[in-house]
Amino acid sequence: MPDENARLLAAEEAALATSSRIKYFDIVIDHGRGAILTDANGKDYIDLLASASSTNTGHCHPKVVKAIQDQASRLIQYTPAYFANANAARLAPRLAAKAPISGPVEVAWGNSGSDANDAIIKFSRASTGRRVIVAFTGAYHGSTYGSMTLSSVSLNMTRKMGPLLPGVVKVPFPSPWLREEGESEGHFVDRFFQSFLTPFQTYLPAEEVAAILIEPIQGDGGIAKTPTAFMQKVAAFAKAHGILLAVDEVNQGMGRTGYWWSIQRFPGVEPDLMAVGKSLASGLPLSAVVGRKEVMESLAAPAHVFTTAGNPLTTAAALATLEVIEEEDLLDRSLRLGARAQDFFEAAQARYPFLGAVRMYGLDGGIDIVDPESGEMDPVAATKIITRAFELGVIIITLRGSILRFQPPLVITEAQLDRALAILDQAFADYAAGQLTLPANSDQIGW
Image 1 (cartoon, rainbow, N blue to C red):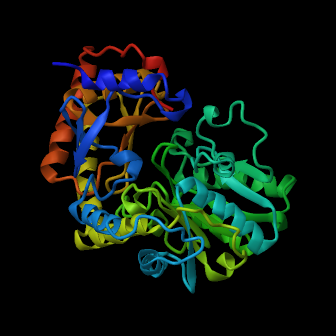
Image 2 (cartoon, rainbow, N blue to C red):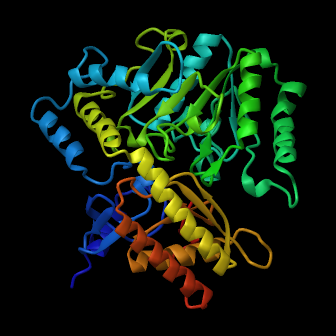
Image 3 (tube, rainbow, N blue to C red):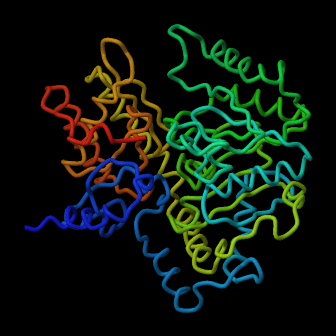
């Protein structure tokens, strides 16, 4: 049987820039339904990636498909930069009402999470009259110049592209693997909060800082939740110094962690600005910056307009997406099936010494693959495991080289989840038995 995947990839290779794809597997995706993807050869896979958490409602959800089809027959595009369209007019107040922000809230549309984070720079500088943005190491905020300046997850995101945006200061993120052996949670938080304070105590006047931007749960940085006490300390510091607190919910929002927004996992913390994207329109190119009205009204048009942002088609998909999440109770489903997955990974952890920490927040997990002897991260082992899982019919990738990224569509059935976990268990067993080898392109795989 002809290998259609190989044929299409060969045809694409001469025309696609190397910078445009992070290498993992040689697959061409042809179609999908729910949590199942089918490649160009007709092989099915259970998807544990959900298109980088941009298809939380699953692939081609019937309600989303119908909304897109119906709208496409009426009007595909007329720029919202000049005139309103009915879907965007309905969506704006619905999204504003769901924001974890008290008082009047407004939204501004974009096309990707990257420009939503760029918008945080714009609105925070305009509303405060200050210039500096503080961000965290390990963060991924996007690939436009502003958002990539805020990011700290891969050297290839900045190599050969400087100078980057001025006025951005990075502080260390309290990643769980940086906690010292025997260190208490309180000491860990205090140690990293002191690192956070160091710039403010030595060279960065707080009154010149417009915003602090943070992922409440770092996505591409390893599915790592900010310690609650650390987040509360940062939020209190920001409020005390008139600094806006901005959160990036592009990866972790829209129900991914069992809450509408991951910041809702932090009692008493309320952001001033929030970036939303990815699953907002079930993967169609729509994003938004959502914020307090007094902040959002600091700029006048055309400070943040795009020809296609908030167009009739993408906002129709977003309205349907909100309805699916509500009608199918996907928040509760994420928590319930996430607990099921956590039980599996923790049981596997007891059997396989190369499974390190397990971090699960609903259907949102990071599982460390480590060297049992040293305890250090083991990217070679992780690459072997994800490659074997792919061969067996499961799509899962790594973050930071050695962390399994577990983010299935929230609509995954219990039977599909159980089958996917059984396949992962087989991959773990095969690795433990010394039966796995690295793929030929292993030096190209991953971030």
